[in-house]
Length: 211
Image 1 (tube, one colour):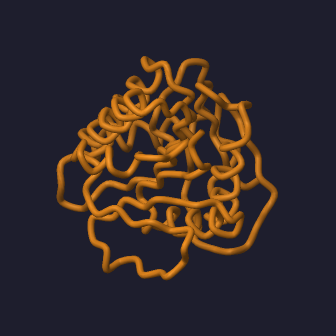
Image 2 (cartoon, one colour):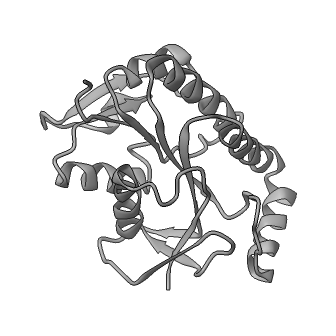
């Protein structure tokens, strides 16, 4: 039986750093995929570093070895081609090969899912993203379609603006519309970590926000 160990992609980003700390606070062993290892220094025995890029399936294979779940808070690298669908393909293929079933990933409000009833403000934000960042926005939607077409236990968490703070606030979750304009990075990290032991949002795309 595999040891309970979580693969984390995007662990040095504005939400990923909070996720990593939340997992370590829970004493959960993690493997971090880092393109530049100098961005993260630790002597914590619960942390293992894998150097590589999510678009490289060899790096993903190394990352997922001996892991029981994957959480991605991957952001778009500035000035590069959109990364999301390529990373998702690599993760999904490797998860199947290694017998891993749980995949938790974050995305923006612009992703459309079956059953959505987005309010006017969220709909406007979605349209704005398509007009100003068409390639990455379409690629995010493709990521959702890849997840939906897979047989793994995925959860795609859709977010408004992330506020980098250790403060916690009342939080709401909805499967049809975003319930607020911001989400505390601390509240998000707790929600993502909670999904490791919950089946409530398996194969679903919840919105989460501070109310």
